[in-house]
Image (tube, rainbow over all chains, first blue to last red; front, side, top):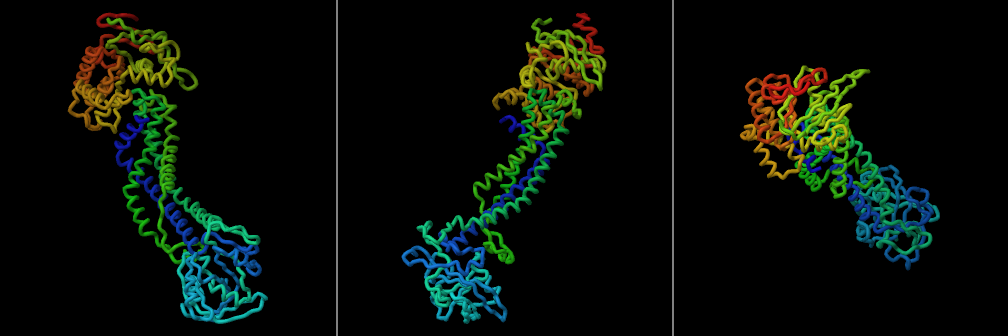
Length: 384
Length: 236
């Protein structure tokens, strides 16, 4: 095997430009695969951290009748949890409401939250410090959609526990900038005590954000762990990863096709050489091995070449990040305005394995023909 | 005449498929070669010279009969065993040199030793010695494309001889050389034959080669028609 590597190295170095052209194409595929996967892993990591920091805390205790994906469940999906049970829990009450900015009507989720909470990144201290009758904090997306600024007042209409409509002007006391659209789009955050007062729902909550990993079980409330809450986000990102992989699979396929082509041509063009190897004492399988190793060594050279320009490039991109257009942040999935690619060991080793194994396979396939060659004809360079 | 028989051809027949029928390249050949012989197969094209050399060189096997080379019956050898036989005991010189084009002169000669797992220092010593035999010790780094025909064939000789094989097979070694280079090559091979006691087997229709041979086996239509040993007809 060492001999095959030794000879393959000599053959490839001797082949000069042809070797480096193949290696260059393959190295490009190698760097692109690393970059795209690193970008998506970076997005995944960042999105998870953002969601934990801004929305999920250490998990959520959700009223059993409330379903995040069913707006009709908002009406009845709430309940009262005794104060004695509320240790390590931050209550949130969700109600449906409408606002009327600039004469338009927008449906919103009105969310009451304990102002003193510190478990999520929402700047609820702004609610405490405000002297407004009904202070509200909103996210930048909501502010943009309703064209609202800090200190603006807007008419809010809601229904109390009995279904009676009520309306009042509320004051925007803060606009926060978060990468998590699910706490921003179409949402108004007000002090929970004020919401209880407005809706006559003293002590009610739709859900609680937990400050501990696993609170005790409470009948009528379902605990969703951090991992469980992040599952959907992870699945969305994995799906994105799979769809992006089509591009780099195509790129890899082009590089592998170049190797395959080179191998097929080599075996035709180098028949005399193959015959000479056999005459000099190599077994046919050793020659097959030599040609296969030659093909897989393209992937080694590709890695060396890829490292030469890819490592500085990928380190630079990991440090500066990739700017994400504004439009992408309206997708409804947590995405920062700048993603910092993350290149883990698993990603690097996985990519190396993918490139080396696939290069070896495409090299071996045409090389198998050598095992059936007649060495006498091969020495003469006769096509077989 | 030397007596250690290292090649024994017994009733060897070789047939090739030729369309729907068969073509008989060798017919019932019986020959023996001793250690240190400088012999050649002579005959017109299609007489079976190269086929016989290929069988002796274990690149091909007989359809019928036995070809014993270094005590091994070629017909019964696996690919691996025949490769080992060539690797250890047989050197080849081809009409068009068959040098490995991307290797230097040194690397071409070294190749045979790489297959035998010699250490780097031992390989270097042996390669330089082989290059000295053929007078190319000053150009180890040249690529085959930069060599003249005569130089190319001398590299081929060094490559074949570097592992000091018992048998050296040379298929039309002078066919691509001018008369001067042909004589240089033949003198070189004769000297190596005498110094290293290697058995040389040629196939040729070059009269210059025949001048140097101690034994000439004449083939026609796949049959031995005359077996001359230096001024004496040994068999027919």
